[in-house]
Amino acid sequence: MGERVRLNVSGGVATVTLSRADKRNALDLSAFEQIVAAGEQLGADNRVRAVVLHGEGPDFCAGLDVMGVMADPGAVQKLLTRNPDVSSANLAQRVARIWRELKVPVVAALHGSVLGGGLQIALGADMRVVHPAAKLCVMEIHWGLIPDMSASLTLPELVGRDRALELTLSGRVLSGIEAFELGLATKLADEPLEAAASLAADIAARSPDAVRGIKEIFSAREASDASRLLIEERIQRRILGSKNQWEAVSANLEKRPGVFEEPMPEPPDSSG
Image (cartoon, rainbow, N blue to C red; front, top):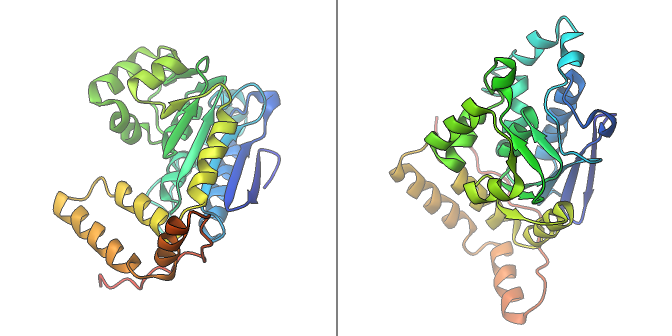
């Protein structure tokens, strides 16, 4: 991908590595652009069944590279610019939102510093495996700023509005253990990358149609209850009796790994 991000796909699992370890994987304009480019590339790759997101070196991501961004007169404007033909999110927001936009589950492996923008990227993942000694912080208040990379959507969803406000207004640092207790972390692990990769491999071994359908259902949070039930029904009708669904049944009964085809193509949009 570039000097800020590495991308590898093997066995249906894509590994996205923030690879600026000498700067604690801090986010400059190039990092924002390369992270989004990695997400877009994965979105177009039907080989991918699950994604692991992690940081190289001692930290996941220490947040914004303030000096690097401020040194570029046009960087802030680029970060806050949106292309409505591509996404409702601007570039700064897309580094977190793009993981939600993917049709496959994303597991973040978190260790060391997970601060500011780094935490917001992690919140964009579907699941987070966290080292007990990791340090997590919504730290924008320390710079007189608000978190503006979609944490206003993802943080309350995980911990509730009151706790989200407390964490954002105080800017206090959480250990991985407290993050797990509050619901920010899905699970704790002494080797987060290994545990995240194992979880992703388990997901990748399942029927890709079912996996994509499950993510779609759980991503329809803003829809009404009635609409979400209709989404469930639409997806299930589509999957029932498909080749991958029958293979899942056969593999389960025969106690063997499934051998699945690529996911079914998306049906044409009939809303118009």
